[in-house]
Image (cartoon, rainbow, N blue to C red):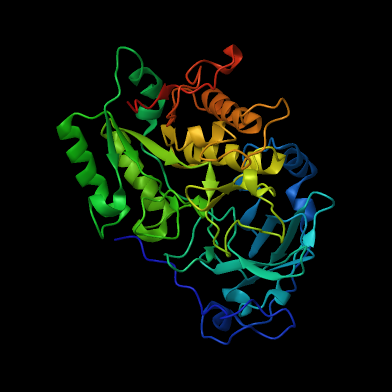
Length: 421
């Protein structure tokens, strides 16, 4: 078996030390490499002015290549995180004894992005951002753009080098657009990987699942969310790592190999995607820089009453960019053939599950969530434009008009809508 869980050095039991002393002694990777190394360096210029401009406008379609942790060809890694209201940001990790004062980031102009490099960092090192927020509270945060994580319930991010995986599904990718349509109805097998073959990995399941689905005559597999989430006993709909496949079942490349195998067997792959809301865990997105950053600051728009979660601030450029780029990320990096967008109805209506007085009307006095509508239209549009033949399916439980009409016709642009009775 290729996969082994990333092993992190001991993390501090309380927020990371910012006085200069190591947070906690250990015998992990930092001890092997020595605790000195070169001082972190400012790397704002390496991001590029265009990257920062596109981020500010909410139009950076390959955001995962700019923010997060990136292994450098010259050694070490560059870190970049969006935290516009932070007073100070460092990185605590295996290479610096979890002492964030040894890897301090600097603001990249007025972009709200903090950036820096450290040449001691290696692929596989665990880390978190130490963010002193606008409220002067120091928080240890997982990387919102992490492409790999520890195996839950541990929650550190893991430095991931560019994938060397060589795809073998060229034929599928070139012909998939012709495999869907009125003359080729979808037959979808829905799978919660954690319970379908309990205790097995992406690698273990790949061939067995392909055999099973082929035998039953399905055209596609739809996976319940595979993005990282805190509670393994759940179905995965409270996502904490939008850019990281859950480490419970293996490495990102093992997930790629599973999808590759399904494609080679003529089976499409749909992923449940959750842009409506996110959990309130204090190490994740919530109040990331001491303010309501990813969530809306008004609880009448930023709290979900049914699920006890935060609702994304769909009107903020950088948040919208985070979500649109995430949809593209799964299609680009994992060859996903479609997204089933969860809880669309909860996004469309400002009064969803709210009583009178518990919601705020839009600028026209209506109940339609205009910013969420705009986001959904942008997601469907860019997916169709950049990845022709992919599916974008709405789990929409009301009679909202035009769900599958094109955005140029005033619709949402989905290819399909779930039949929910």
